[in-house]
Image (cartoon, rainbow, N blue to C red):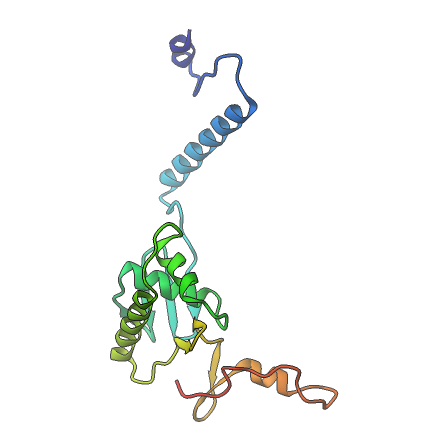
Length: 185
């Protein structure tokens, strides 16, 4: 019976009695196959992620390409995933455990110092292109972060949020201060 139904043009066949969960999963699988076939036919990549632009840094996850000031940086998969995790949420501190999960997944455990050595190699690769590179900040005892969007004004770089907090309309001092503050990149 099943063979004749499939020969007549059916995509799938389920015998009675069946669970609703099985039916739903079979429908989802069918929709995934259809979506994949449409994407393949149109020539579009199936899981294209948009590029991540952070000032001079551009990360293209779908092509695994990293550029700094227009120059391509050759990164390993682990280094790329660490940098992506930091650049996705600029200004947010990522602990070594967070970075470990981003690079290796939750089921693999590596020593904390492994993350430190990957960050050290990342910095070294960027410093070969730009001696003033300082966009991976270390917060001792906490982890690492990629700074918020920075603007160059005459000399050193400054944090854009510093202008927002300093310019209070009531004239009162700002409620928060920027940890990044002014620093040389």
